[in-house]
Every structure is written in structure tokens, then in C-alpha cells.
Amino acid sequence: MNTTAENSEKKTARLRQGTVIKDKMDKTVIVEVVRQVRHHKYNKYLKRRVRYPAHDEKNECGVGDVVVLEETRPMSKSKRWRVKSVAQKALEV
Image 1 (cartoon, rainbow, N blue to C red):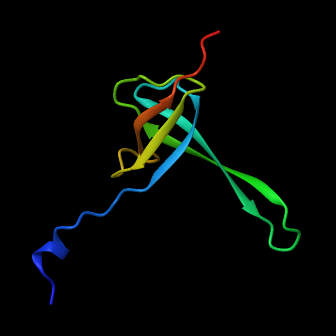
Image 2: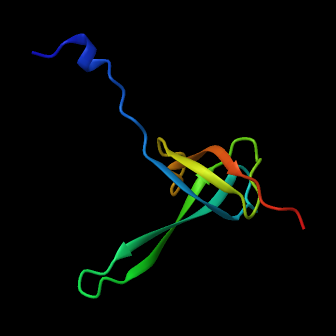
């Protein structure tokens, strides 16, 4: 049988780390997440990238920042991620 301890366990949200590539929209940034996958035949590592629109409540992210994304409820047609934290700020030029 299920106990109350099992039912009260919360699912852990999925996390991604990526680089902000666009920040022109209000409270939204586009984050590019790059991962490496091995080719099944040639054993060569290939780069695969995905761009996620993410919710940035305080508009604190800038282009070039490395951020941690957390999966959340749908906030719009395309936004399913939110910025959890800024891991590294971009260098000012």
C-alpha cells in the first residue's frame, strides 16, 4: 500500500545549463543548450543544440550569460522553462 511519505515526495524538476543568446523580449530570454552525442557507427562526438525560450522574471540576464534553467508549467505558447539562477555573468566589453 502507499504510505503518506511516498505520496508527499515531490518530483524533481529537470534542469538545463546554457548560454543566453537573445534578451530583447520583456521577461523572456532565448537560451541555447549544447550537448554532445556519440555517433553510433563512427564514434565521433557531434554537437547538438536546442534553443529554449525561458521566463526571466527580473530581466536580469544578458547576452552571453550562462544560466541554469528549470522546467515549469506552460507560461505561454512556447515558454516551458524559467531561469533558476545565473551561473556566470558575461564579460563586459
